[in-house]
Length: 166
Image (cartoon, rainbow, N blue to C red; front, side, top):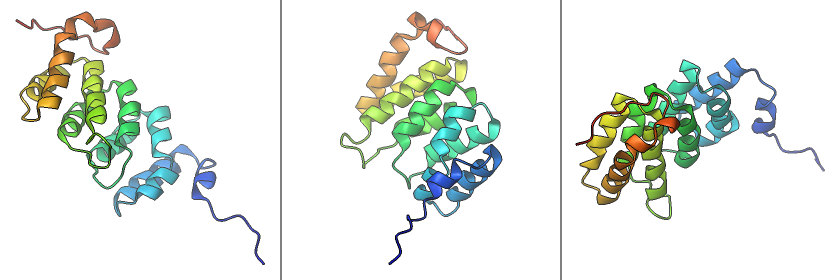
């Protein structure tokens, strides 16, 4: 009788260096393998090394991916990065429907509009102006609310872009 513990990649990947974990996570994108991306601790990479351009590219790829169910967690990680490179991916993610969520992903999409607010640059502002005109009424309202509060929130924003809203 074999009583050995089952093989657990997640335990092993904690002991790997940053470059190896990043390689595993990026390689998991090719076969669309959420279990491998999870085991490679892709969210930890985003949280701990989000300023690395290679990790930002991983975050963008995971935001755009439709084969996993971690968009909310990825959104939380990238919201705190406040990276200008994420604006287009956050815009696209705001327009998606997340059928695996109980509310169709409304909470996730709201997080993405907040993340755009936290970036705070011209591109993020423009993205939310475009979202305000979205055919999905819920996302349009999220974007409008964040635009309305734009001038009151500069301390939260990374770049503190402040256009006239009239």
